[in-house]
Length: 315
Image (cartoon, rainbow, N blue to C red; front, side, top):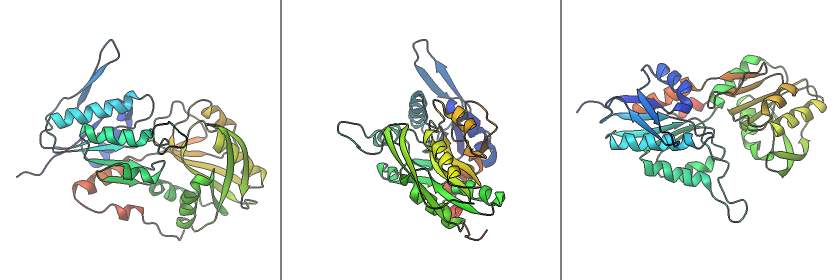
């Protein structure tokens, strides 16, 4: 029986990244077309034979919701075209912030999205920096949950900052900041914030000392940039030498770009899980393509991916 052939396809929202992933993997991006109808309906179509192949569908599910539905339709089309296995490569897993009921009569959207992906025919998920680790448990199929530390840590080390301190912009990111602190053999501080309502911070305080330190704020998502720029201002007010922000998913909605330009950040380092809407002299983008390509290669060869996330604590 011949070995299955790997085919990498992309939805329209992530073609810029999927093309880089395919090239890093050593293959061409598969041919797919999308027909748009006048009423807003659309239909994906694979323009090559995928019968018996291992199909990888690359698509981030950021707004609009059409991006998620496009991924679902592609999965359904691949299943009906007799693909052997269908893996969804979802660099940014949208709706992940709705991972629990935080008040009565609301949805758990992340679980609903998981159910939809499985129903559409997805047999494996590859993603990076989920907003909440427990979302992996929403799936009854394997989830390869990658971490941007594999990309950020080497870059941070290359900066050779003399007095490095990691920071979390909120208490929810304490574990992430502590993990980076351990990998980089340094301490961390926490910004404690109280929200008036979603995307609006009412008050913020700093837990820890940053005087004379080069501080890096680490987070998984920057949305309106209100919290993280406020944290950066607070850190500089407390006597830090410099402050930088690192985040995996640059959602950047509302006044985010304007806030970043006016912020005290030396730079804001992000990945390419979501394409930038505009350029900024303060924003640096690091690619996830090589990481995703390597994971695809290891998944196909039934190799462990855990070794990708082991770092030495020495600089």
